[in-house]
Image 1: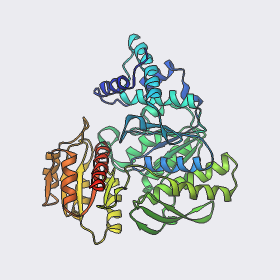
Image 2: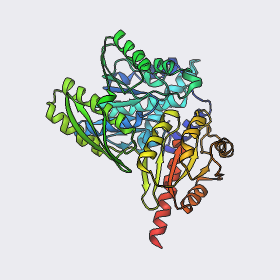
Image 3: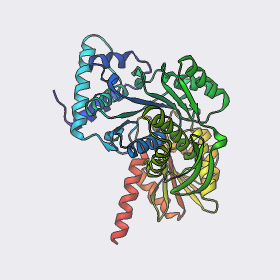
Length: 439
């Protein structure tokens, strides 16, 4: 039976209550039921703690600049369930979503009746993305892991064109391990024999874990060299930097303006240059031209994104220590003599204490909220924790109240933490601007 879009969304909401389980048995059974359509796709598989979405956005932009059709899978959704799977930057439609989720639900029912366990919400969404992509037949699929790598549902794929590992820091520790090296081992689990492996700048011990796995799998291995990344200029909404492509120093500009975007954009330049030249036979000069244009046109909602210029409101999905370190560097460089007001909402399983310790000293005023997510940490609890690092913290009952109060401070507003509330915040700020324009 074909579900409607609303039924498909509530079906996934319902099964998400049973949480997430790491391991591949479920998704393998599910994809078997669906004819293993994922094996027909040309996939670049992306894992890592920070920057997966940004690197994906750069890759999508560069490959589309070259005339390729590009499908992309990344979660969690910020604004609508439809945005987790896109084809040439356009979200799956409600009808298509209902159709592929219905197909996957039928396969789930067959599994359950054969005494197999019910797939999780992430497994269902991943399978639905594979089914949709197989029907669209894109040139390239950008596939982002949900959590970890080795046991992540996306790792059901057998032979990716390339595996990409973005910056690794401590995240999801109760699932993946206590040290960055253990976490790196889980992420390196996406590396498959005879493919290309690309790695962001990492600390030495982490890089070793990844390059060892690549060697074992007989892969070509490339990693970003930090000393070759050169920052030229940074301001909200603009970042200019230099990084070599095939030995030639190239000056890039991007609208995605957190300072950390240098690492993500350099990684994307490295990946696309090797793939375009080695796999698709592009010339070096064409490759450079396409990469420059692609990086310049890339955008990624919710990542140091300016959603209002007057008052200045910026949202950033910084939700762990690594992202907090990067956000702090950007704030210190871009806003030297500016007072900052924060709005913060986080999930309970994140290491937020270190985040508060790093970022709160830069704020003038702090508002906390509870994200509307089953894993959301209560804003009152967050306020108690925040008070250890700042003396001006206020809990707000909802996002609208936080936005109104933050804007009244007259400071630059930086909202960060869980992506799950930033979507709502963006709508509120937009509707406030529209009302102001009408007055």
